[in-house]
Length: 70
Image 1 (tube, one colour):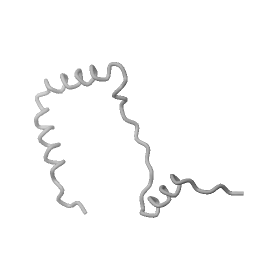
Image 2 (cartoon, rainbow, N blue to C red):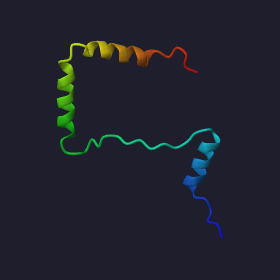
Image 3 (cartoon, rainbow, N blue to C red):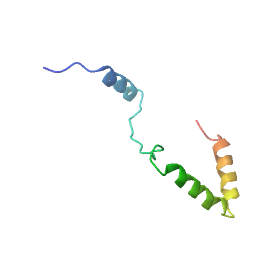
């Protein structure tokens, strides 16, 4: 005998019907001890990079440009 689909399974099936698929993303654990200190360390490293402003300008422009999006 087959079990009835759960609400979660029905929801996922509807999303798949819409052409979507699930993915799993691993991100840094911001609660981990030392996380904030490592962020500060990395920020300090790039703050001394002479090309950092160029990179920030590029990223800001790229994020604001929606030309060609559909």
